[in-house]
Length: 101
Ligand SMILES: NC(=O)c1ccc[n+]([C@@H]2O[C@H](COP(=O)([O-])OP(=O)(O)OC[C@H]3O[C@@H](n4cnc5c(N)ncnc54)[C@H](OP(=O)(O)O)[C@@H]3O)[C@@H](O)[C@H]2O)c1
Image 1 (spheres, rainbow, N blue to C red):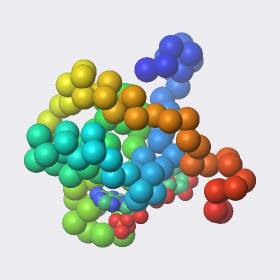
Image 2 (cartoon, helix red, strand yellow; image 1 turned 45 degrees about the horizontal axis):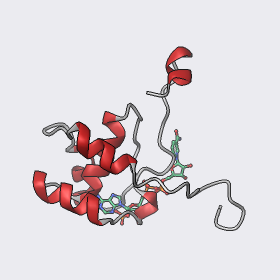
Image 3 (cartoon, rainbow, N blue to C red; image 1 turned 90 degrees about the horizontal axis):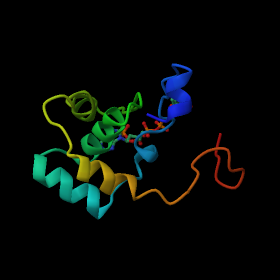
């Protein structure tokens, strides 16, 4: 966890943990194949293992079930690091050009 958050006992919540449905990526797909999980499950598990609360949204009952079936596998440190490196600095909120509320 980020030390400043830990010091204040603050636990972050992901704003849109599945990038609002736009989350497919080769690294994620490869890891999903290894665990026989969906890419969404890998991303949600990565959040959890990064001490971030996830509240994924789905209107689809099968996906809702997928989105809570996250506790029968664990990512390795290397996999967590591989997903960390996907960060590009892109903002999905608070950017007036793409913020669509
Ligand atoms: N109240 C709070 O504490 C709090 C905290 C954080 C965020 N939020 C709010 O939550 C909202 C963000 O949620 P969001 O719905 O935009 O983002 P999201 O949860 O990242 O993404 C939802 C999208 O992903 C798709 N999806 C969900 N599960 C999937 C799966 N297993 N496989 C493939 N696709 C899947 C959904 O489609 P389907 O419906 O078709 O499955 C939907 O299009 C924001 O409005 C934010 O303000 C509230």
